[in-house]
Length: 268
Image: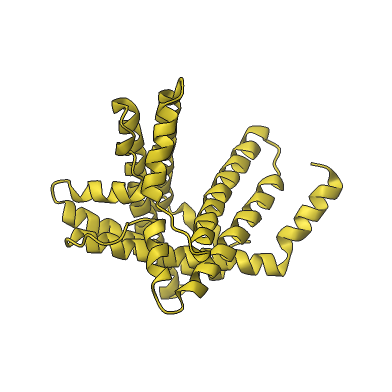
């Protein structure tokens, strides 16, 4: 990167307003995960209303008093966090080129996810609707309709499954503690507890999303790829599915609570 460009990017990344908004991004991400977890638990007890994914959470917010303000906060927070991660990716340094580019790709991947969520929130804020499950199925159908698309879809499923596995590893190994200044005392222990439970539960949910994408590729049936909502509903169909879904839903709520702590104490 050119020195002058790097200097501008570094200055932007260190700016107080961007850091504040990026922290707000972690906070609103926590709100969404708490809502998704609550919807998942409701599904476990037989509720049929609401999708247990980001789209469902945004729709719930839009129907509550003051929800429009919160959705706009999601838009701003997600875009700010995505921008901060993009800047972080290109400012990554290190002697090992492979590790440096690995970190860059990881940061860019997270940035894309946050920016996509910000885009979905913007659609809702402007009066539109989003359906993550239908979008996943539609994208899978388009891939299956193209030459070699089945292999791309399979690879995407393996990638998502790997991301889910990484979340589980990050939780079990407590690697998430490297992302924030851990509080001391009971608050620190609670944060670690929320993080372990939350990351493992989110990893399980994301992993099931990957499995469904792989199934869609193997069966040539795009309707099998239904995103997070479909993944959580598939858990409910398993033996002891109600218990599993309640645990995963509670874990997503724990992840949301961890996000609140990260909003305050993230290493930015």
